[in-house]
Picture 1 (cartoon, rainbow, N blue to C red):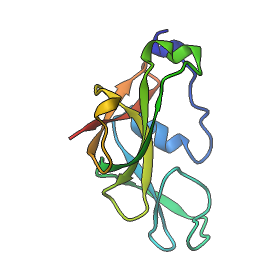
Picture 2 (picture 1 turned 120 degrees about the horizontal axis):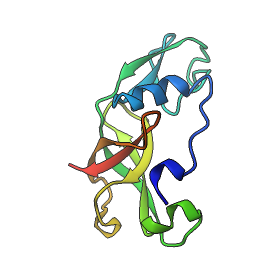
Picture 3 (picture 1 turned 90 degrees about the horizontal axis):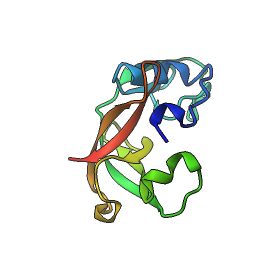
Picture 4 (picture 1 turned 135 degrees about the vertical axis):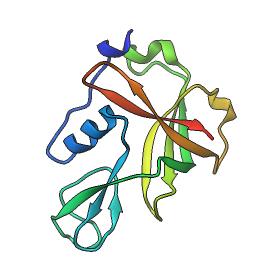
Length: 137
């Protein structure tokens, strides 16, 4: 199945600015205006100080693999041609406790190691959507 035919994210009030930035190949994190805490995924309320005020700052786009899962079964027909594929949980270099997820691009999932350094790359689905992926660095 081609990329444009796959399921698409549901954009909401909190995530729309992030998806728009990814479409421009920019990786952003939400930063609380009250206490400065970085967070992902985007949300309306800071988990540390409960502030509802936040802005967006550029992310470094680098991190290390904290955890991962490799799918060997077809759970969604749209991704059948990619099995096996890996989804990474990446500890970002931007700060303690900031994580982002995404699939591993262009690497055999068997080559993943704990704490493996990775960098964000962007995959254009079409003119409206791009996705964040990770590759070894």
